[in-house]
Image 1 (tube, helix red, strand yellow):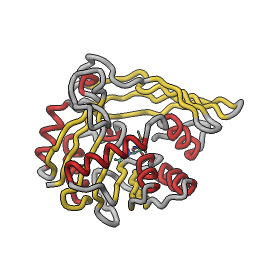
Image 2 (tube, protein in one colour):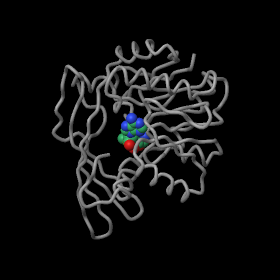
Image 3 (cartoon, helix red, strand yellow):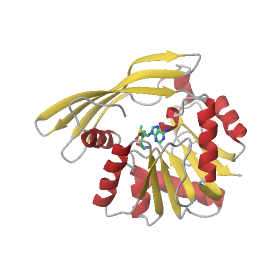
Image 4 (cartoon, helix red, strand yellow):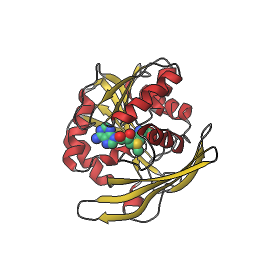
Length: 263
Ligand SMILES: C[S@@+](CC[C@H](N)C(=O)[O-])C[C@H]1O[C@@H](n2cnc3c(N)ncnc32)[C@H](O)[C@@H]1O
């Protein structure tokens, strides 16, 4: 997250937390559990939330009694997530670090990189280094799930996810516009854009903008990068965080989610 204007970092993290609070974490963690049962033979006992931001899944898994880690590069986000975990009465071990190269205190049974955070890995080398780091931080046969954008978005066939939405928290509501004025470089597959947020707290409305730089991935490219990393075997590809939704070109398949098992 880059510097905002009139907001302090904590307020920015709170706005992000509200904007992306629309997910059904119970259902998503049940899906992750089912994938672990199917491909690892047991539910996870420990979980690593990579690029955790406000640690939605990390905190949710901690409420289920798992040993949980949250990794993020942004110290302010970690500070916010730590306070949030405390508010939820949970213990999450936070690590400030870069998901390309990191070490957790102990390997985890399951790791996840949620909601397109994977696209902050900007080069092929970043992706391969990342996959090797994740594998190093997983137990034997551990599972890694990441949520990438659906490839139809890369080819501009359609837009799979909404890029403007509103979501309300307890005393806060946020309208988010994602990917405003996008400039796409077809050689590097990097997109620069702006994330615009309009935040209402009581009668007070403030807006701020973040610069965003991310990288698009096709399905064929990801398959090769995973293979080249040499550390993961793809078990299945989902089109949503739902075991019943395979990756395909239907409307219901709106994400690209590899389910990887450590070799
Ligand atoms: C879009 S937010 C997603 C947060 C969370 N995963 C979720 O489900 O909403 C992306 C987060 O990734 C973090 N991030 C970006 N690049 C990173 C990197 N190289 N290593 C670790 N964290 C990173 C940012 O600081 C930010 O908190």
